Image (tube, rainbow, N blue to C red):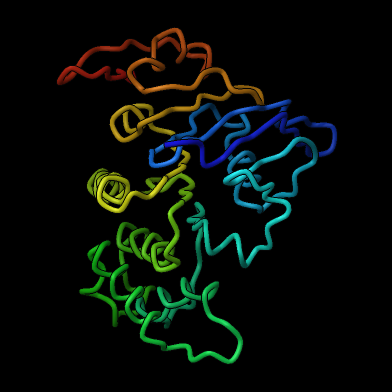
Length: 257
């Protein structure tokens, strides 16, 4: 498998604040790649540049050798699905209706909304995420973990092979965090979806990622397989704290105390 994203000499600033500095990195196809780093390191900005929510100021990001600046948003949405950290929906909208919005990029002008293909993709997405059981419920009645699964379901209904997740476990209790991360891993292993996500929990990054990209001050500090990348020295360099690593079931584990 090759690289699905190639980023070269990327720069971005908010006024005089240089958030991304000559950043170059590749994202592998068919893997779960996780961006980690302290608050303000630039990972969210990189995420938003890659998802076309921010305009590139310098350098370039290529998707399958095409500069994403040259790809129209509608066409980009046919290839890339995105779940942001904060999501809103009308209080009375049903889960199934909301998931149907994931088909928007594929609907041509004048074509029926409820085509057989659209219905099939919506049903499949609901089944994959185990949300079909509350498809008729109003989204506002769901728990935080259930809502997060619904947002991922919308992304799956887009029928893309690339999924971006911005802090998918934030504000969830441990049960729903694990449910979401196990779902993400299943999407990769069973459906060959390339996942790029931002996580704050180092141990979750270790257990649910194929590759980790560690950032600091708008730069890539290191990239590689979790067991090779995560070390006590890296944690100190990236987060500015001294934490011990131990081993659980043959894998490194951070003691966050």
